[in-house]
Image (cartoon, rainbow, N blue to C red; front, top):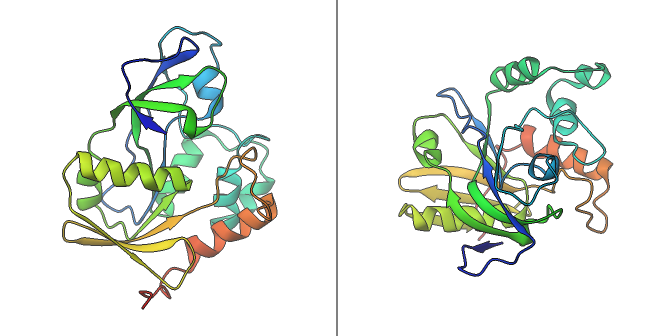
Amino acid sequence: MLFYKKTIPDNYILVVDKTKVFIRPETMKLIMGSMISFKGRYALGSKQPFDVTFDYYYPNTSKNSLWKFLFNAFEPQLLNQAMVTKEEKEQFLIRHHIGMTNLIAEAYCEDGNSDDSKISVTKLKEGIVEGLQKSKVEDIYFTSKNVKVLFEHYLSIKQFSQEWRETNLEDTFLLKIEQREFRAHIMPSPTNRAFVKGQTVEWKKERYKERFLNTKRIKIKV
């Protein structure tokens, strides 16, 4: 993942991500991604700039299991429901005090490639830290290591102070932004294409359940 360079290859398209920053005053857990999904980026199959209207509430598919992981952790009965509507998903998030946001507002993306390493960022979203400060968020969940690195850049660019400390849990940090402290977790990618040895869909499902439900035992690594 790179920030904007003047020379952009011909096979890159400009994508505008219009997903909203979904952080409510009651939000306690925030899921943070890079930008809109593969299907949203390339649904038009065009090399022309376009605005993405695809949002967080996409159906579970063979490409992405985020909602399956969340349902498994909080309301397993929803896994048996043939269709969970956008409105039902938003109410699910509200019930469990979960927020969602992407970091990137605009970027050049390699046509047909959803890998975050193929993104050249031109604009970041506004209001994320301000939303955090007005909320009850205690835990931030990055959907990949790339998102964690991007958030570090985001905080630097927006001129917010940041301090990261390792904890006793793998890929979990204590993060201080200005005067607020958060638990920050690097989660396995919910996309099934992002395969890492040993990270089966079943393993990812259990990791999401464990990290979303058991966070109070985290301690600073000394």
